[in-house]
Amino acid sequence: MDANKGDRLVVHGRIVGEQDRVVEVVEVLGPPHTPPFRVRDERGHESILVPGPDSEVEHRGHG
Image 1: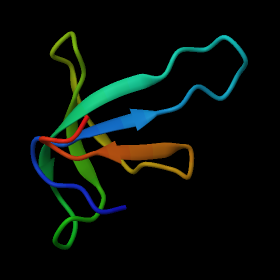
Image 2: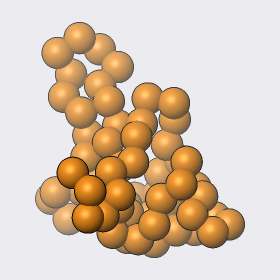
Image 3: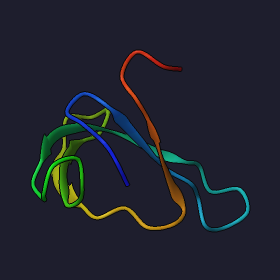
Image 4: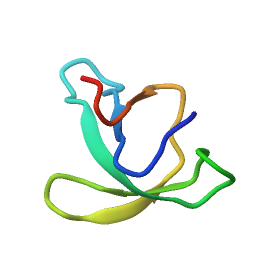
């Protein structure tokens, strides 16, 4: 998983009807561009995330 500060991570719901979780990368804690990431959700809550295979990166500047 290659992500930078400012990118968004989309964690897809694992159950039918569950919404995707979208968070912003605020800090890369692993080797360059790799997990773990410090992320912030839309409510301002920060946590540490190691994305799984059900996640994808939306790079800053790309929709």
